[in-house]
Length: 367
Image (cartoon, rainbow, N blue to C red; front, side, top):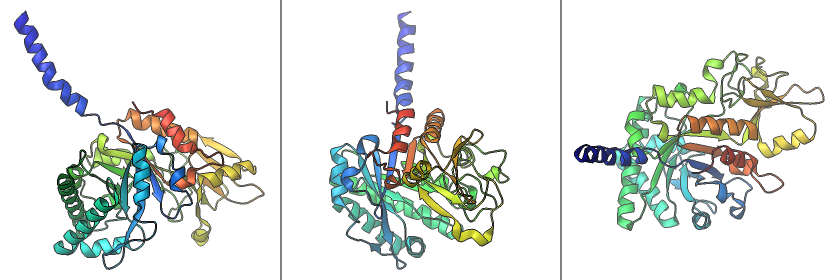
């Protein structure tokens, strides 16, 4: 009996640590845009685990573009005082052109990665978030993977050199559908990243045929383009079709809605009215609600719509605290790594709180 008990204990000792290590803590990642009107001191650090500072731009020649707002060591200092880590996000402007240029030449790509890593070290950032929108063919697919590998190698070497207690983080934003997602080499980059941030929004807009919701948790049977329009479908694409582990997937949520120039949701869009489409921040949406715009809950898609008043043919598909809570609960059920929010300045209410971020944390609290 003693021998049997010893064997059982040895088996448990061998598997329990592995099981415990298989579930990293959930993350709540807020994107802090340099062009937003939100001061650092008003950032909701208590409701975040990470901040992504966007954007560190790259020009068409592949050179980093710094400004008074980027990089920002003060942002890193303030976040660190609250135990929040800060990543610098590569993206915006002509960054795609610059990345395509440097990725064609291994020497240029290595030099670019080295400069990014040095900026991280010099300014107190905790890692890099790559927002390459988007690789579009076999050449840029290979270039994207090469850049991820070069950044990972450089960040690891820098962490060793600085004797950091924790390694530098590396994450990457990816498209929600196969249209661009097919040009991401998931097998190559997944081992190098801490997570992939799935931009599970902008699923509808002036590029669509019908006025579907831009970020519905589930597809609506009323939507003629339902097969390509759901947040759950986007996350399953990366997990099931592309083979990325759930613990390396972060669901993206928009802190804005999309105004669509139609009388009713799911109406056919008129290409001649493309300029009438626009993004509407959640704080502005709340102002429209206060002015009498009625809100309607779509139970199929688990998302709200806003209808214009005064006879205007406009609807807004958006997220509210209820839909965010549904997404947070679903993400937890699916064992995803966490959620990210674009962008924090769009969710700051007159009472100084961030209602959408608060709803996510309430539905999926930290353990």
